[in-house]
Amino acid sequence: MRGYDRAQISRAVETALDNIDAEGFDDILGHPFEWWMLKDPVLRRRVQAEAVARIDPGKIEHLKLEAVDRVWVPKRVLNDHRTASRLHPMDAIVFNALAILMFDSIEAARPDVSKQRVFSYRKAFDGRLLWARHSDALAKFHEYVRYRRAAKDVTVVVKCDIATFYDRINLHRVQSALEDVGVPEAAHELLNKALITWADQNSYSLPIGGNGSRIIAEAVMIPVDQHLELHGVDFCRYVDDYRLFAPDAATAHRWVLLLAARLAGDGLSLNPSKTHVEPASSSEEEDERETRRETTQGTPSIEKLEFMHGPSGRARIVKRYVTPKDAARAEYAKMDIAKAIAAAREHAVLGTNELQGILKGIEVRREFIHLAVVVELLYSAPAFTQYFCDFLLRARDLVPHDVRARVATLVGAYLNDGKAAITEWIEARIAEVLGHSSYTNPQALYQRFRERQSMSGSFARVALLYGMYGKGLSLEQARWLKEQAKSETGSVKRAILAVVNERLMGGERKAWQRNRGQFHECDIFSEWLVADFDRASQALQGWRVDLAKHWDDGKLL
Image (cartoon, rainbow, N blue to C red; front, side, top):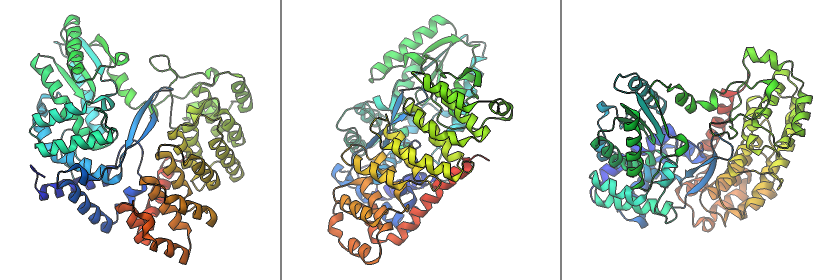
């Protein structure tokens, strides 16, 4: 590729693979089993060579891109979602490698670190990491904001962020920004064509969740940061989150308009619900708490079981179950679980905080028999399902075996009930539960997968297959999946290959593997699953152990 030689491309791909090994393909959707497959040195060498071969010609047709799988992921407020992107593993490696090739040019054009203007994703290769850990960099950002709030020349602070930032980034602006910082033409043209392909031929949106997008998004913000500096604005930024430090209110309002106008030129806008002009004496702590909200929620009061509301009055969603602390346990020990559930059933609309209180009472009082009724309540509060699933996995060693079996049956029925308002994200969370050894219900997962074969979106379908892996499907079911593989592509096909190879026996498996014609659309991962299943199965077992360890680390004691 003009501008970068093959050795540079190879190093960038190797760095991308190292970083993916350390941090995953993205930080939203979790590790797919291909991440574990890449831990095999034989496959990794093949993947690295293939990625270099795709990038080096500098032609879009050589990249062999696949469509992006997009998933609605719930945010912290009811009915508020963000879109996460799952690229094909090879596409993600190629994208990250292209971004890493451009990283030096991008970083050189950003405000110098010593100015303490931009804190997000500053290039600092450290082993397998591309920059300081997110939590450390964000802590430095808030620390600097507190320092500037206390300065004598600052009386007013503006807090604001960009609305749906990654989703709204204009791809033509991306190419222009990369050209401005000196990225070779062949490279930024190739990336632009790839981004447009992943955006379904739209002119905006970066894939959300991976480090490649983080690097490229910072390039887009360089002209905005330079514009603010040119006009004397005292500011700092972390990704899409700005703070403006003004000497008075008039200047603060003028600077907000200046920033909004500059963003509008790039097709971006400030989020009005998160734009605040406030005295410098106001605390920054609430913003820091907001970033940790999901894991630091206070324990709801039993006497006041109601909605937990966010800043705009909408119900706030908590995703992770945290066992009550000592002070609250005595209060929950007095709770009448049956009475609380009866009261919940009478309500036309259930508050998520109401259901949180019931689960905490069940855990403290060890009255797990009531979990069967809680499953029924999910129909009236489907957004609570993720929290309930988290509870089931963390509390599994406390729940009696017969209750776990009953809950697995009821959750399986809930999953397959067309009346339940289940999103793709929630479906995947349920699959984690029913694929776990404590709540195994592969028949429910299989039924859901068959019903879902005509639906769009592969994320949930793959999660269903993950749950079936090694869980005792019948040979008849494995054979149906074997036939279904012929009409599938991408991640769903690879997951079917893993499930079927694990279940088929002896000669039948060998005959299926020899029939390579049915894998004509397969990629390097699929080919490896079929050609060397013994090695692939070791990686898949590592994935299952990793998932189990994830819950072991967080289970209740």
